[in-house]
Image (cartoon, rainbow, N blue to C red; front, side):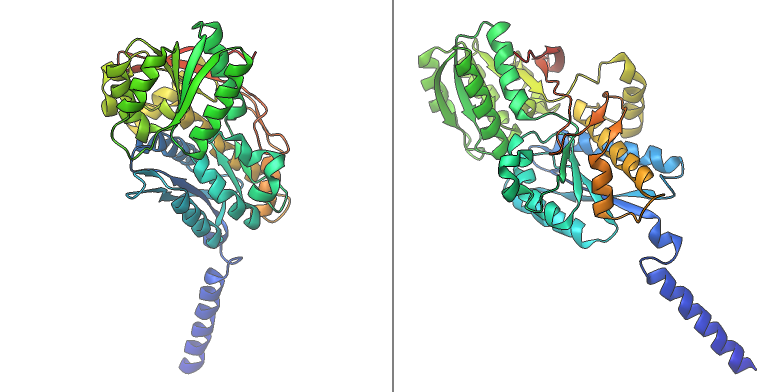
Length: 401
């Protein structure tokens, strides 16, 4: 009798362990959705990436504190996409990270990437896995352009969604602002060779030419080089009204002090690549003074509607927010909304979640969020900022025309 009871107990225990291991078994296994976050958390881009990470974490914390969504708890799976060799974001590392997401059956969606070079590397991986990512800051339009579907989403369906607009608007609208508000008649254009930097410099330059602005030349900065003074001295001799830089912080950190030394009075402008709260520390307050930059979102952090959110973010995350911390927070809210709409009706898979994200119609603290067939957000607001006394100050909405 004792043998029989022991054997029965062992059989029951084995069955319980089997259920716990089996993916569709106990609630502990079936009630977690992992969200992948691959961000350049070290190197030149670390501060902006940290703000984005903390925006996503705040959303997950709020959702889980209320019991999760549709019975699921959200769990962040975080990897660094920067490498010491690159000194900044590394597209190859981002691709490796996304392959890890795909290999984990509980990772059903992602938030990111930060940079467009990463986006170009990961999109085919996402397409193959039918897995959606929502980027709060990557703006190169090629990734979602139907002309490049075979390259970036070979399976056809959109997998790369955005809570910001693209450089098809960010670059041209900055050109509009400099032409109309700064009376720019001539400009010299620089880029840092990255997918984002080249793309936004191209779109800025194209629009400047359409406005009749004289483009005096174009050069590429190597982010790993230390000295840009030869290029800047050449530009100074051409006497441009403005200098435009398309790129991110690794080159910008050196460009700003050298441009201040060589050509201090020229109007200087860039994109969201230089909307980085660490820039005055990296380059010096005096060097970044007066620089204009754009962001591919509405101004949010100073909005009275978002004041309570900003206060909470500062308290809980122990840092200042950025607009892209808010668009990251909203990216998680989009995923949660998609889970809530999907889970009661059908099995929650990467593909079913992707389909629900595509159909998003969500009110948020940045305004309505909905996507076109390619994954781009329908709102196209671009905001202009200026560095003043070591702080980034909102100036205006960039004109579309």
